[in-house]
Image (cartoon, rainbow, N blue to C red):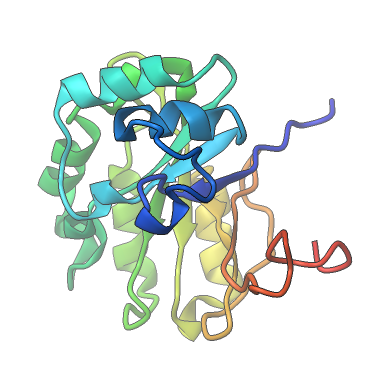
Length: 206
């Protein structure tokens, strides 16, 4: 069966987009709705820094059409810690803040690790066991973005595959690129767009 491709960006509230991508005079409250008419996905990055009210998640879900998905970046308190296995409380707080209100519009959760975080097989496996398969009846999918070269090894790929987590394909000038498929879906983050290309990347590069 052929898969479906979602194309999006990280965030939607940017001053330079106003009177540029967004029509002149468009109320700020309608920017998400407008962006969702031109994209099929948006990555929510603000959740890396703090939680949102349940009413906010409901509002976001109502602002976008059916078939649109949000990916959600997990809280830094889950991933930026010395011992990942001790993150159960932070993970529960993050997943329980109301993301289930997105329903079928909830895409993968992005777990982004610092470039200083090295691969510790036992600790990382313990972390993966903490990731819930669903929340309030909504199925959860998990994507792992690692940024240290120590993760470029068969053992990490095997762990991700065993737990059904996707390894993010991150096109970045500094961080490692891991192209292994480890889940039923693929999550790509293209981070080397250029101002001289209207689409950021050339057709050949894409």
